[in-house]
Amino acid sequence: MEGYNFAYLDEQTKRMIRRAILKAVAIPGHQIPFASREMPLPSGWGTGGIQVTAAILGPDDVLKVIDQGADDTTNAVSIRGFFARTAGAATTTRTQEASIIQTRHRIPETKLQAGQIIVYQVPMPEPLYRLEPSRATAARMHAIADYGAMHVKLYEEITRFGRVALSYDYPVMANERYLMSPSPIPAFDNPKLDMSPALQLFGAGREKRIYALPPFTRVRSLDFEDHPFHPGRANAVCALCGAEDSYLDEIVADDQGAKMFVCSDTDYCDTRRGETR
Amino acid sequence: MTLLQAQNLHKRFGSLEALDGVSLSLRRHEILAIVGESGSGKSTLLNVLAGRASADEGDVYYDRGTGLAPLSVLGELELRRLQRARWGFIQQDPRQALRLSITAGGNIGERLMASGARHYGDIRRTAAHWLEAVEIDPARLDDLPRNFSGGMLQRLQIAATLVTGPELVFMDEPTGGLDVSVQARILDLIRGLVRRLGLAAVLVTHDIGVARLLADRLVVMRRGRIVESGLTDQVLDDPHHEYTQLLVSSVLPT
Image 1 (tube, helix red, strand yellow):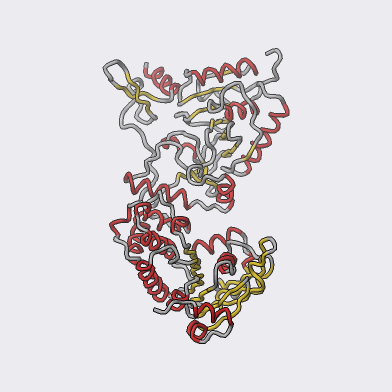
Image 2: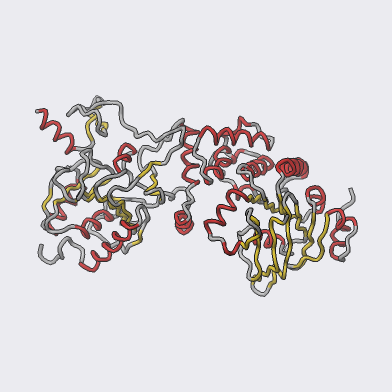
């Protein structure tokens, strides 16, 4: 595209972001500060993810963008269109065909492969955010792995609700060292973080942080011995494809308030329906 | 056997000598009271001994089972572990030490979980046991501390501090903010627990009565220096330094 550098960001900025990514990959789960740029979309809409994607995107890459699992929502369509215009990148909605997947709040149902990169949009990278108001103190807590406060939070959840009632952004330990926010993916997706063959990058634009999970990193959801981690899922099957193993969205179907459950991952649902059709 | 030792501590706040060459030692299972008027440096001394503040000169030595070693060689991580598991710190205002928005059980469990406890049922049982030990109804395990009275809050802080079985407890005016009738019961509770658990303790107070009730030994501070030290009864019954004489004589007769 005329007047823009390849993939929108200038090369110096991309190098700066790549350096942050390299550091992040070297220390799984540790948050690396970076000089986040203004992007042509509001913060909170994926400015972190879009900068990470811009920094790693090459001419041969195939890009997939999902928003809550769907390829056809405004945010996903816009970001895909953005890179198609500014980088001439090939795009796809098929999980297997993509070399880079930028995602907001989901991990695709289809297992990721070695060589693929998944980029998460992260609103709040600091898992201790609501427990410790001072970022300086939180950084010290990370430095000496002082995570008792997070377990107190889980203790309180069990005491009040009988179970840990966090259904998304469920805290994990990366490589048994750093407490990490998995971004607001459903707890259902947490097991997919563990030992994934794909490289996982997390970008928080407003908070100016990048962190990462290199392939085959051990990722453990926090729990108690007598209250093990339980990935939640609606007790239903997809009304469109009949999947019993996918994460479901509840959709209001008509003005009478009838509801149906469908796969949140549109590509997974389409693929299954194509096969059974 | 010496558990904690301070050697020639100096600390300056601007031109003020808060600590001016303080040395003392504490044996296992011993309770040492630091008395003095406000501004005499006793709280500063307590904070330096507990590793919460650093001295400008001198060092604090602690025996972790392998002989006395200076605290200054410990990293932040090791110091924090020591403070979390083997030491306790009881503040005058329990609201500063406790989290008022989480339950009593969560407050007691925090130190356990920070030390690696990961069994919900065990943590709850231990917390309930400690509530009983400080004379709070275990049925209040799931209540928020903000609904507790001042005396109950102080008891809760004591339970939350002692739950990890520390060997050394620092106390900063533990009964300072309480009314007189509650003071007596808390002092009674502390005395019972400290003796039963065989704790060593450093106790800061301006109340001679508290020192006489709890402490084995006593140091009197004035203007950042220790002016007199010895067995509690000996110092209080036969004060040598004129400032100690003033302190003892200023207690109202009962």
